[in-house]
Length: 282
Length: 282
Image 1 (tube, each protein chain N blue to C red):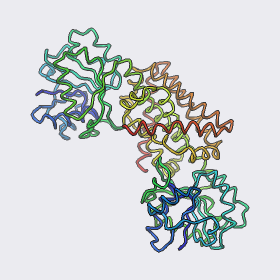
Image 2 (spheres, rainbow over the protein chains, first blue to last red):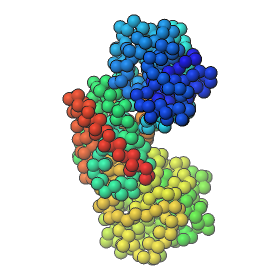
Image 3 (cartoon, helix red, strand yellow):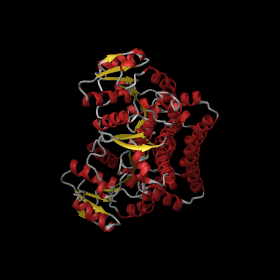
Image 4 (cartoon, chains in turn red, cyan):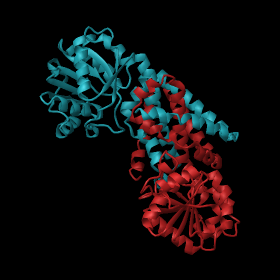
């Protein structure tokens, strides 16, 4: 794959550009972005070789769509109109149902592969791009059977080259599970940040008393609202379900406290310590 | 200070022992613990020099109480009965009101200093002890005026030696603020872990789909229930207040989602991004 187009040269697009270039030094990485400033930064940071426009997509061997998921559902059908018969188009969005649905009936559906690399940080934009972000991480591929076999092979080779392991899942299962382990974490973190900011009018008190525990729990509240609001919108019903369960668990905890049942609280915490076993694998 | 007694040779007690020994190589560090296994581990790990018993406290220049806060309120008055007139007794608990209250009328109150070093990890026990845990961290001192001036000076020298900066606060303000930046974070993390564990009966799905975001948000759910349940109990009214506000914020977020008001959600997230400015200081 010689001509690689990255649409959206932010944290994920930029990091993918770095990893792909490292694995394929002879490829040319083109950047497409609605922000010319981001494209200039991406060139300066050596994430991409050249700027490009959407019309150039016809020359692409590979197109990676790394933009907010609301933008992806709008752009993806247009992209599939523009490509040539050998182009592989990959999206990397955090939701998969709406994205797979919007191209379901597209004549070039078989040129598209829906993926979700489970990797990232709380930062965004070209400057947030990191080398080796995907090394050892999982990439979830949805509806693999709907992609031409030859392009599947190319995609798998690409992910293997940048050190990712693959897991196959249907879009419904993806969106349901990811609501728990990713989308809910972001909301819990954002609302923790909101609660503390609202209370602690005196900033100095937060600053002085906050330790590494707070810092790690609230880290995701630094994330980009432009990226996350559309994710919550697309995964609305699953996210609401997780929020109901989370709020119920918090309310039960509070009720146990009000009733001075600290033995039950200890028991609940002890069972949850089981997360240690689960996290060992991450 | 030659004879230093650490009561509770776990994460905090053990780490303090390491830092104090480094700053005072000629001191002898004695360990007191209800678990003989922990004492043996502490010797093996070079956290302490010798095992000791409570009755030996009469020889102490410094006693550090680093046990769960429910145990501290029971033991502290007894300790103040046992010490000599020059002994400094310090506690390091995550609550300060109950602890200060229990010794309020003690004839040796002036030998005691209430502190809360804002440092730690999610692990516990002697094996969790770390060198330099307190370097650059904040220590909150409560009711400093109630400690003999000479012993205040010794304590400040000690904290300076191990690299801590000091902030003074009354126990009421401490317990109220710490509920937001520490106690609530732990509950939000524990309940996140609980929600995900309950849902994801199929562990493999959590394991494969959980990334670094989930890992950091749920990290505190690994913490010791024996340490944390008593903290929530002692700080009950403040913690319940933070939980009410947190649950309200989560419920508002959910209602906005149900009403498809994703603009308001984006706005709330944007304001909360302000946490970046606050965390820069940590």
